[in-house]
Length: 180
Image (cartoon, rainbow, N blue to C red):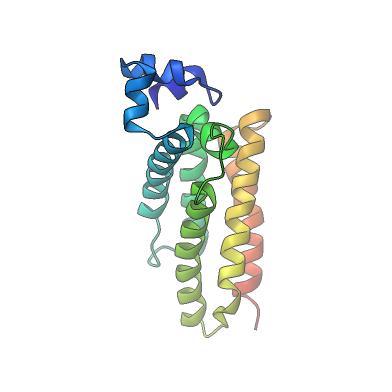
């Protein structure tokens, strides 16, 4: 992960081995191939992101605050770890099909946690929770896509992007909460 932070998402195996203080053959004793190394790094990075995001999730927090916390945590994480984030989401390091996609898995887990909270809140208001999964997956996708763009473009501050995303996400969620 240090080599990725230093050399970027297109890091070479030689750079990774050098950063680890070992030769490439030694590195390949620990990882079957580039795909195996990609999966190990990706799983570690997505676990870190998931820990940050899930730690702030609670049905005790009002929905707008919950959205703000999740969006802020995500944007702060990718801003702090841009090269690691790019390495994971580009999926270009591996040279073979992988058994699972850590990015999709992570997004599904976060969306599932959000959906559970939203569904509970909708039920508590006597509303149909049927759209909670749809809303949560759409919201996670929106924030992820905007975050990808923002890391490249940076025409907005993190706070401005957070506030725009919060306005869009809250608009959708508020419409659901106020439907009858």
